[in-house]
Structure formats: structure tokens, C-alpha cells
Length: 225
Image (cartoon, rainbow, N blue to C red; front, side, top):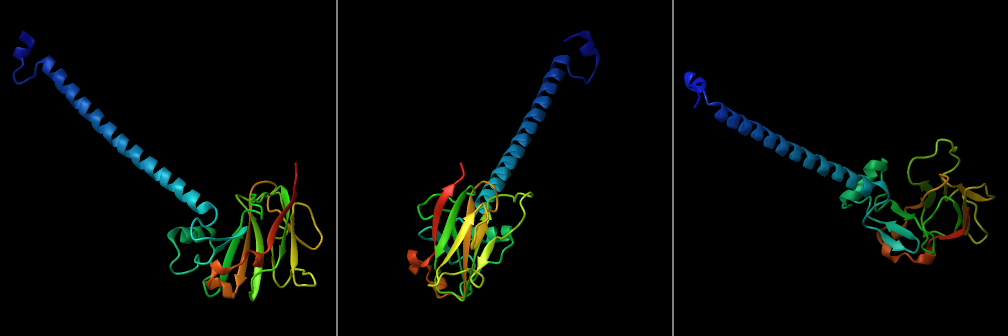
């Protein structure tokens, strides 16, 4: 021990003070590292949770559908026993789903050959619908609407659609104006989805019994190159 260290009663030697300082700094760094790791884990978990929730509720209902040809029936999305994902999708859309006694929703994202509906293509939706007091057929695109495209028409109702002599109807879905029942594409490119809502229909309680021929056929006519 040096004379200076010995002359200072109650003081630590320089070497001891340096070791104590290193221990204190090391403890602070370790605690800061632990806190940073916890914050990182929480941020990562929160980000993954939000991303997965956004993905699960961004499109259609993820569970509970009954496939009937190109269409998918959703008989329980408006029931008391609907799953949490269906309720989250309804909340995100701001929609009030049809209850079992009110009707049934059917959606289609593919044509009758299984190809995804594309806004660059043209289609016909033709045939009949299951028995119902009224029905609506609407089309929607995925993502934000193009602000440069005017809102012309998004759907038809059973009271305004033009029918053939035998009661069948043909709706043309095309980017260009068509005679008769015409639905314009909601956006220039990207996937689209059709929604058929049946009101006061007896098939609401037995979606599994709907026959493929009882629903309109979705036929692709061609696509822009």
C-alpha cells in the first residue's frame, strides 16, 4: 500500500476502488441489457400479434365456411355462437351480419374452374339463386379504392336485375361498359370477391344441402394482356 493510500483513513485503495467501479458499471449494464431484452421481446410479441390479427381479419371469414362449387356459404357468421374471428371481421368491416333466421351470406373469390377472380378479366354470373324472398349480388376489391375511378355500381338486387324468359339472369362483370346487367370492376387490377346475400331463405338453416346447380355459375370470358 502506498503512503498516500495509508494516509487517507477510511478510504479504499485505488485498485479496490477501480474494482468496485467496474462491478457497479457491469451491474448497470447487465440490468440495462435485461430491460432492453424484455422491451424487445414485448415489442416483437406485440408486433407479431397485431400483424397476425390484421392478416386474419383483412379478407373474408377464416373459419366456418361451407363450400358449394365456386361459392362458400357462411351460415353461422351472424349467430350467437359465431367464432371470435368472425366477430372481429364484422367489427373491422362495420357490418351487421345476417342472423340464421334472416338469411345467409355466400361469397366467391374463384370462378367455376377454380381460378381466382381478377380485376383484369371479364366474367359472367348466370343462372338462378336458391329460393329467397330477396337477394343481392355485390362485388368488391381487396385494398383501398382507386380515388380516380368514379363509383358507378357495386351490385344488383333481385328486384332490378333483368331476367331471361325462363327466369334466369346473366350479370356481366367487365372493366368495360356492357349492355344489360353490368357490374364494373371495382379497381383496375388485383383480386375481387363476389357476395350473394339471400334474405328470408329456407336454406339458411341447412347450408350443406345447397346443390351446386342451385347457385349462379361464374364463368371467365377473357383477360387483358
